[in-house]
Image (cartoon, rainbow, N blue to C red):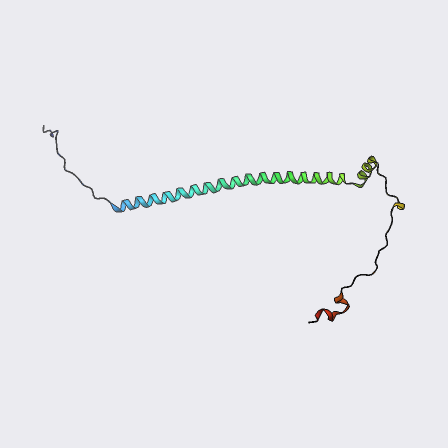
Length: 128
């Protein structure tokens, strides 16, 4: 039986690099990165849209709440300034309604309306 010696020297083998395969791998890597980036961007847009939806719903509820509060405050204001209520509160303070004899009129002092000099003599304002 012929055995191979244990210290067999192997010849060094050099492979030629396949440049086309390397470029294909680089191109495939770039396409994969672009595709993954697109998915990440789409997911970010989706989650941002959901977040805006939640904010919009919160603002819509707050707006409805504020409109209801505004309507309630307007109703309270109208009730507070109602003539019947003002009259009853004035009576509680000791005020009495105005009588016709207490109302007086004044005569106008000067019945003449002052007239500008330009209106009396229109050509006076255009003199040079």
